[in-house]
Image (cartoon, rainbow, N blue to C red):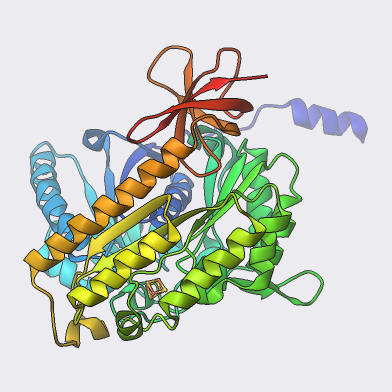
Length: 467
Ligand code: 5AD
Ligand code: SF4
């Protein structure tokens, strides 16, 4: 019996194994980190069908635009890119080569069939909850069908999307995103997310832990948990109780080899005690919090349906800083929301002064069709929005600079992420997410080294290795 088995295992297969016909997919990602995560999962799903990712558009058989619909400009960019791709597809067709064009992400979800009408070169339109159907949709598109898949079924998506592959993870680097929650039930009146990403869904604890462990096995040392409303994440824990994000972070911090945890984006209303305590108790949880406030005027916050006041927001920041004094705060701001007066805007400036931001993103209000904000009266002139944005950004820039300069002389742990511009130089991120350049001979990407910050440039810090 044993002899027979070994004979069998030594024999050659009867037919040679077919080499899969490798095709190339080029994915262009717009918008937020969740799209970055989704783009990676899509390439993973397609690799099972023999598609290899490429960064060279010219060699791609399949081009996917993973789009963002958050502001008008972001959505319009997609159509101008599709114009360029149409010309390329035509030129290819003359050479007898095929090129399939797909639009995925939030523009796909929001506009669906309309994309096929406006951009005849598009073969596939796939909303963010249907990526797992991508390989099948692709087969249909190749059969000549113009496919539109925009059904909501977020749970399905996570059950069917492949987990990150170990080899691919390694190539992608030592930091990774992990979506734990998707969709939003908050309905801020300016925002399209509840319509494009659907209602809030949390992934189960076991699924998240398994994915995190896999990432760490693939060499990842820092994981950023993602969600449109990440701190609204909740799920049934293995102990049978309902877990919140703070509990999940505690569990993930137990993973050996994982050095750092972050999460984004949070809503002030969902910042519970457990999460605040996690900032006190978990050394692996980086002292950085992206907590958008949008406006400092109670009147505007109400009109935006943010469901908190400026004072409540400031009190919350003080509560977190009391347990983690090292915390860097980042925020999002919108200027020129309908009805915003000069006085409302001054309230926002006062809030920024009171909080002190290490980092911020600010935007002019952009009308999004279908949202309540679009129907409100009192739209603000573009010139006024521009003036306000300029003042607001000058203040935020000053604060960001002050924060960076304040880092000079500090000793920190630095996770080395990629090569720097000079030989021997590596770039990592500080605990507060700033890029840091360091001469780190003898160290490797993935190492965490002790450094002293020596200087602050406009977009990054400089440091020397110590110890
Ligand atoms: N106009 C301008 N900015 C917007 N954001 C979301 N919707 C709009 C809009 N209609 C901003 C918010 C949000 C960030 C992701 O984008 O500041 O926090
Ligand atoms: Fe949009 Fe508000 Fe939900 Fe954030 S919390 S995704 S701004 S609706």
